[in-house]
Structures are given as C-alpha cells and as structure tokens.
Image (cartoon, rainbow, N blue to C red):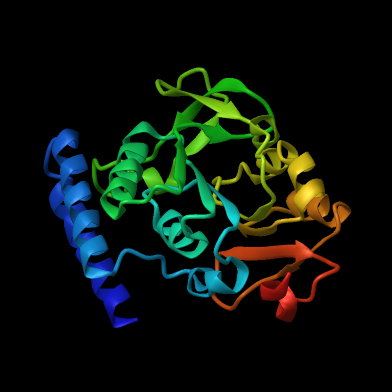
Length: 243
C-alpha cells in the first residue's frame, strides 16, 4: 500500500509540473512516468478488484478491457491469461491510446489486441468531451466521456462488442465507460448470453443493473470500491475461480 501512496503522490507532482508545459511535453512526461512505474513494478490500480483478478482469470482465457486508459488492467490481465489467452483492450481517446500502446509495447506483450475506438450499442461517429483538472490547464483524460454535442471538436468511432464476433469464450469484461455502461452492455447482449462472462463495471446505474438482472446476473460489491462485480446467478461468488 505504501508503494501505491507514493505512486499517487508522485503522479500529483507530475500533474502540477506538467500543467506548466505545452501539451506535447505533457504527453512525453506521462510516457516517461508510466515507463518508470512499469520498471519498478508499481504500474497497477488501487481498486480492490485489481488485486483479486487471479481469482477470475487464468491461463488461456480471453478477456476484454473497455475503457483501458493507459493499461493498468490490460497489463495485469495479459500476465494472467498468458500466451494462450488474449486481451482485447479498447481506448477511444487518441492521446491516451498512444500511452496504452507504448506501455503495452514496453511490456513486450504479444497477447494483447488494441482498439482505438469506443464501445457502444452500434457503429457510429460521436463526440467526446475531455474536462480539465481543477485549477489547471491539463486535460483530465480519466474523465473523458462520450457526448452528442455538435460542439465537440473530437469525433471518435464507436463499435458494438457483438459486431467483432469474438471467436473464443469471453471469461471477463471490465467496463469503465464514464456513464455509458448501459449502451456498452446493449451492444454485447449476444456475447453475454453466449458466454456469461464476469463483469467489473464502474458505478453502474439502475437501468444497467436491471438489464443484467434480466440476463441472469447477480452483483457483489467489494468494500471501498467504485466498481460492482456481476456474475451469473448460477455461480456462487466463492466458486467463481472454478467456473
């Protein structure tokens, strides 16, 4: 835990310093920061689910990381599924995708497929909004979200997960879509019915829960977590690793 606290503090210092530089410099500073964390073994998430991913995923599994950001979950999942498995990682924001690709390449993974697209219920072009961090001019890519506003100067492609027709059974899907989770799930209905993957979803809304309940899912929330884990009602929480 101390390592995570130090990492958080160093990231805040980096943000404060980086905000004074041109955005091209900010991107390079971030790349160097993440490279340093990867080499030191501190490139990880402090979310409770992150520390127990090995309970859900094993060698040879196929998994999906929606809203991969810079790759914390992507990296850990790639380690767990091994050379016989595969991670499909989706990150729509171009600047963040560059960091995701850089981090993945630095780790030397050959079992990760990267998509510079958003996941939704259909294929179309949409706008994306990226707010600033408070009291700085630095963009907060962690809070980037899709928008229907015509004023957005960044347009990205969305695809449905079902349209990709993943050839193997999907064991786990992590979703961090900044309020877009319901549309993401509607676009993977066939995959959910076929494979009943474990789902890790950040801050699911009521309609999201209702949809998943209709598909035979129940939920478990870990203490102090922003996420909810959904799994088939036919499988007990204690037996997830065996399923």
